[in-house]
Image 1 (cartoon, rainbow, N blue to C red):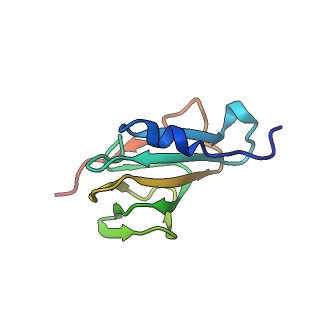
Image 2: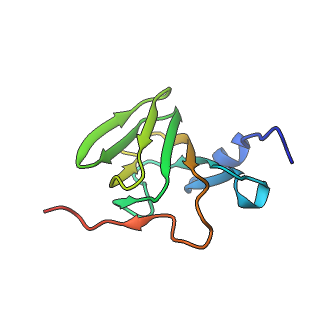
Image 3: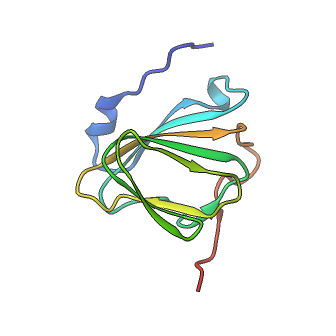
Length: 125
């Protein structure tokens, strides 16, 4: 078991695209949760659009400003903000700013690799 995990910030800044770095997952020995570091460029966001999960999801914003819609309500999360998405609550996130956002994404319990992680939700009228 690797007890210390390090974000490769050089890799995050090396490309302009969205980047996900797994820090803890099934492949690295996780048993109770997963953790990823994600960089989202301006104008991009949740690949699944509005969606839900069968697990709780938490984002901790490290840099940039993230725009969010959670259960039909708009929010803005600055660095130092913890965002809570309870299981089953529709949400989406995007970067409406001019600089990349970087956040840690925690999922608990550990999502099953045999089930879809994001479950799309149709837009509300």
